Image (cartoon, rainbow, N blue to C red; front, side, top):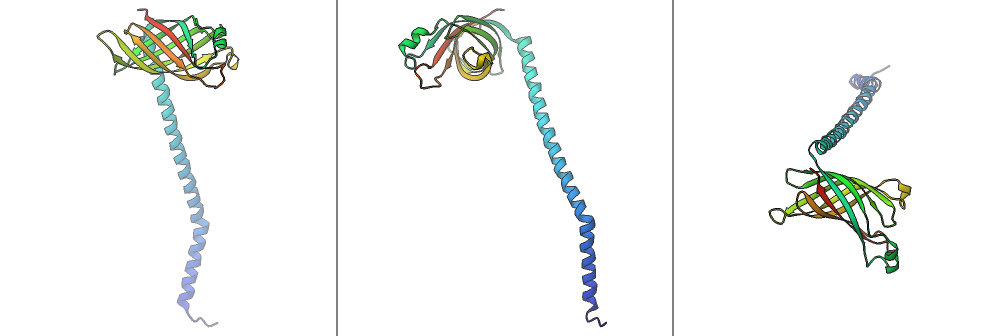
Length: 214
């Protein structure tokens, strides 16, 4: 057999051997390396998420302990719920309870900016003369009006239990909060907006007071 170009045959042989070597040995290594890299990245992400969750739990626990140890204990008294005259019919208002008598307790703190934080639990007589249970957190941005009097505006994130919603199963809500008074006693209010155009359902303003106990 006559070989016209031995160099070409040698080059082809070397190329074929390298190609086979890559397929047999390097491809599995590349796949394994990719899988290991993906696993390492997923593990790092999981560690980061776990660290975030652990930090969140740690911060929440520290805040709870601060409320317990340093919080000012206060008594909360409720007595009036105003149903919007523009969102309820006169007939419906006549059927509803506006003497929302109730009481509760809170623990109050001041942060580094002298704004107010509060943890509370409270029960009142709702619009249908049934008990309404509430527990939650309040944050208010405070502004002094004089040497002793201040006003606050903020929000509450809470759980509510009512007989006419979800069979007394607590449900979450976020509502606005406002207050005026001194650091030791305040007139406070929260507003429940209208969620339906039905004239049988409207907005409600709940008014209550808070007094420090120690």
